[in-house]
Amino acid sequence: MFMMKTLSLMCLVALLSTCTALNEIKIEVENIATDESYTGRIYPRSNASGLRTVRIMDSNRVEIFLCIDDEETFQVADVSYSTDGFSDEVNVILDNHEIGQFTTHSESNGGLLWNEFHHTGEIGQEFRMIPGEHNLTIALDQLNELGVELDFLLLRFSRSTTEDEVLCSYHSYSHISPDLTVGVEP
Ligand SMILES: [Ca+2]
Image (cartoon, rainbow, N blue to C red; front, side, top):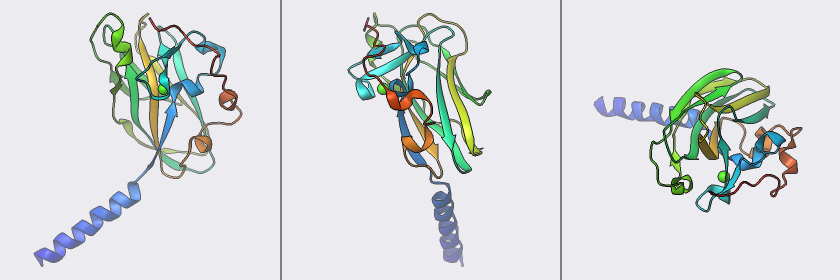
């Protein structure tokens, strides 16, 4: 009897994990930084994924436009970032609603730490995303002229599996000019 119960519980757990398994899509922040608001904010970093990051200073933000055809479950699985200096509170906003926040490291080493990357892990919970366009924004909670650099985001979706499926095609993401706005590594 005990064996049966254990077995059925295991099946249930397996079933749940199958049902809730989401696909992870990696988005390099520099690849969506295509309009002029990103001028001078893209930094070359040898340890960064894709070798580049995007800095958020003061009221700067990073905005990702997601377009999905069918309703699906969505979650921010991870943000890779670097910083050198005081820690910041960083807000993650989906369609004008704050879904979570992360606090960056407070360490300083003369600018070298901009090339050391940290991971936030999951931010917020799973959301049901309705078909259409959605805006995912990352911004500092309080103005700070040093801020934080974002390397990449891992986003989870229940249906979509590729970056091309979830990024809105009418934004300029598909016309990326790699030499557009490269900042200088301090
Ligand atoms: Ca990157």
